[in-house]
Image 1 (cartoon, rainbow, N blue to C red):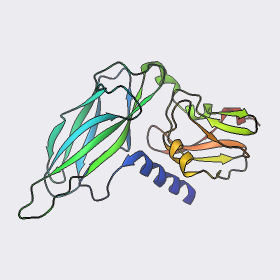
Image 2: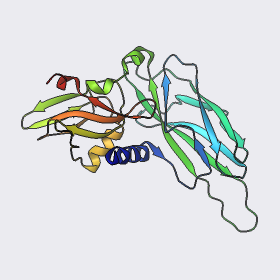
Image 3: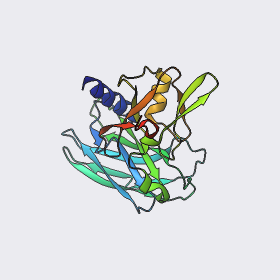
Image 4: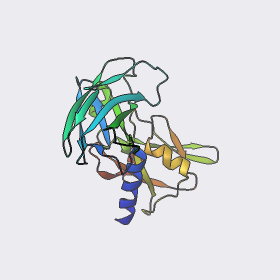
Length: 229
């Protein structure tokens, strides 16, 4: 249980960029936008007693295309102390791949009230991941982590994301149920394991991965090639 709690904390830290002193917080650590949706809704919660302004927008992470893909509306709003504001995220472009997921940053920027005197106001930004899932692959997402594959090259072994989905993986276990030690670089890559990504697992017999589901719960997925063995 301690190991799983550690994985949850690590994954949330990697999936979000959030300051603990922020007044405004989003209602999820990541959002899924299915391809046939007209929009998705999100909530900005004001955890302070003061009124805050806010700006929301979406940035590309991996795409080279700089055209806007999603917009948030309203993009500017005011949130009363202990209040909340619902906003929508809408797709405004179709240039993304339709056979694999794409990933973006959803940004929430605080706009504090002007302080009297010479006091300094801090404007804190929160970022969470927004995953676009094309309509053609929506039905295949459930437990797709089980379709990760092991590839062998001369003298090496690789855990490969041979699926069209982006996973948030916090741990890899061997046949004995022990976690496989990972480099910082590999841990970072697994937290946003993109299609065709791979990590080196030479010397280990991978049995399963521990990952966050679409609903934010930590699940263990046994690789299909291991089942029945």
